[in-house]
Image (cartoon, rainbow, N blue to C red):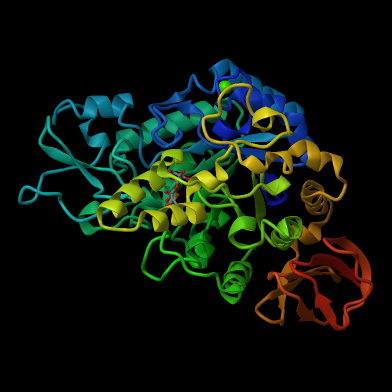
Length: 538
Ligand code: TEU
Ligand code: CA
């Protein structure tokens, strides 16, 4: 039996930015519940809900102070139960974000742990003595600066691979691991659809050997977790794994190994940054390289023994049409092109809220407009090291995480219908043109392309199980077949903003979808900018 998540399309909701229901300027659970009919209309099967647990919100909820409580800014546990109940009525599962590489420094475990060296919770975290009066080693935090923070009270450093308010948990401690499994079972018992596992590749770390991701104990821990929690249940699990290769992805997702359903891999993310540097050190994207990575993850995974996820966007990465398409002259065409290329591939697609209406990046002029801790810390560190202010703002406008976090654009009323109050983050000024209400009223909108693509997946096994086969073309064109039981679909996409040549001897039996007027043959075509279509071959 094919598990449901192989046929599913998942929609990520970033709760803070989705829909405010009480005028405090912050999205909340009741707001999400209110929008379920919209998501059902789109046709998605599951929501990946970014964290709604109790949190001081240093990193928008990825710093959790109580895993079994809802943050008051998002509502109550009763609101959460209501969301689960209502989502079910709309045939939507709720996949919770599981953030267990670290907690907030306000979590009871850490509050206890830092009291003294003998505290029973001390070993839940990673403590080291100073070396020559300094940090134990030169490990860096993903949010700038050292990954070690000196704690005056007990004279030791603790490890934080993210913000200093996000101390890393010590997975070597069996009691801690059991507590996490108990917490996961608390959520499973509520009837959730599964877990998206935040930076899960880090839990096997060995800081003394400078090992962060893919540590020796990573897979044993996941197997233990599987056995003690979701194993044998009809749940979906997806690991966030920035450093997965196809081989590593198979280790996570081979059903025989009893770990996860699938992983998110991010190999395309480094294509527009300078080699060996950080994401802020910009480089122009080479379409040939993008194509190579996309194809690699279709062909180097054995889908009979592994599974893959497909996505362009999430809350950590910029809007794809702004980054690699054209969010001005060809906003609609490039959005439909990216959707078509991705959704007809092999794997489980994810849509990030707003992607389905072609929301764009949202540039700022000054650091005072930026909320994201990653951007702010980078800005301060680099400014101190002599970088130019305008260059830093430019980098933030291209790559900063706030780009994808501006409030969802529902209609053309004040604050895009997101809130009656003062939004926690600026609304993109283009909301009068780009919003859900407008998209729903236009049968030719990006929304309906996504709706169509989801339907095609639900109704055609070839999209779920068909073999992927690349067609030989120039770097700017990505064309591929999906093949199943003698049936053959052809997807053709111009990844560029210039006309490109494409030709095929295939004859068209039927056009499935197209972002320009439909083609009636495939002979010596001059593809329009970002043109994309899918056909059934005779
Ligand atoms: O992201 C992991 C992660 O590595 C990111 O910090 C990433 O490096 C960066 O965003 C790319 O620019 C996860 C969550 O998705 C992110 O929102 C959290 O901030 C982070 O973990 C810590 O929990
Ligand atoms: Ca609210």
